[in-house]
Length: 402
Ligand SMILES: Cc1ncc(COP(=O)(O)O)c(C=O)c1O
Image (cartoon, rainbow, N blue to C red):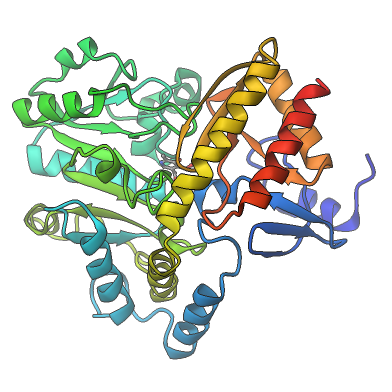
């Protein structure tokens, strides 16, 4: 493979997270397409991993960003100055959230927000152990990494990590072990990086019940499921189970870095006091990101994208199931909800080949981090039936050629 000058400079000076970067040279991105530096369009079925739910450069988001950038960007560490974009976004989120979750603690990344949620649970309960689930992914800061549902990723940092008991996702009996030593149970209502795994009927409610009985806080990590990905604002609403804390990130800033905790005013007041400053963060709730996030929610509402995402998701799921029926020797499972869909291949090598072949056909898919047999379909919510058709066609052709 020939290395372009920009690729060489990237390899020289930009630190790698793994030895196998995807290497796409991005020229621009608009709507559901990313264009490489030669102008070749790629249909985006990844959304920056659940970030660009409104697609790229949505006019309402661009307008909000420009307007706010001309007004002010950063004035003080989070929580000190009153900034209207934060206030408006917090009010709006409280409006779309399940009852009782009415206050937002703004942060910058999903991992940081999970760490803050774990700290909040420790402070409010006075306890120090946690429950997480196999195949969970909550991010890579120290607290979040402790909840990584795959031991090999935790091992190099084991000495640093807080105590976490791992239970099998969807094992209702295992929930009996939640007890009064646990500060919190942290769970992705739909596991993302674990291979797009839906909760078994009653599983989330059973966790809620065990937490309530033992005084353990329930944290829903909605970094990936939030802001419309499942066809509802939050998984909590979709599954009708209300946690004590919802952790938000990714699509919250409509493409800009933004994350947060959503909880009750009362519990966030306790986090902020005695002693104060439990989790100071300089860039949390950056006003430009908040303006973008607010424009994002308003556009999802205005364009009725929740209903649209559900309809597009149902169609994609059905088409993926038809592909599985046509190639049972290659595709073993198809699962998902809304626009969070996983297509499980027989082997990791097959899944990788599907991703690579589809890219040759102009469609970007990716596998999930902890289940590399599963190819994820997570396009922007603005996807049209025609784009869905193009994506499914590329998927089917890639699988056919295996
Ligand atoms: C469910 C979940 N939680 C947390 C994170 C970490 O978020 P961030 O990369 O913004 O720190 C991710 C990222 O993929 C995620 O999928």
